[in-house]
Length: 98
Image (cartoon, rainbow, N blue to C red; front, side):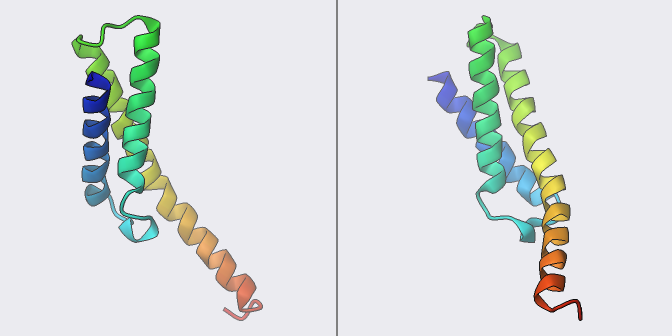
């Protein structure tokens, strides 16, 4: 049952990060919450597999920190990559005039 809780909290952290970082116009509403949830649950599953107790404190801290870090990384990298790709596409479609 704890895996459901940690997934929802990871998605909430990703949703909060979406509004704290600039560049929201370059990605959809659910991207950062989905990244946060996926990273959180993946790290949680790995840590349980490695033997950490699901009711311990460190598994929560590590899993939620990993979800937050993944959301921040995507939220910071994606706008730059998307703007560069959009500029490249505009240049190609305009025949080099813009």
